[in-house]
Image (cartoon, rainbow, N blue to C red; front, side):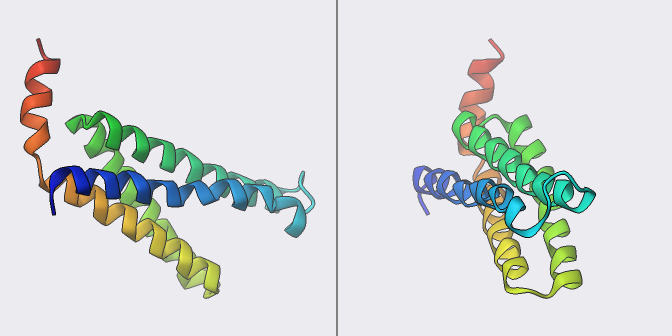
Length: 126
């Protein structure tokens, strides 16, 4: 896959995690908002949004250090999603795991194709 297409796919797949907005917005439907369970549910949605922001920034800046940091965050998010699937065993948990896995694989693929970093890192260090 051509590098620009790979980066474009990575950026677009990162937007999947923006579903965290919907997740957080649904908090009052499932919980009384200012309860411990409601706040955890709301916070989980916000974490998806923050992870999406991090991935979008990494796909735009193509900074090697930022991409490695984002990879670590994606691994943690995917492992957490795997744990949620183990505990809940509900369709939305599997969908969340699928989205995390897509973003994680896209991030890995961009890192593996390190062609842009040679140029970008040389110019940013000057």
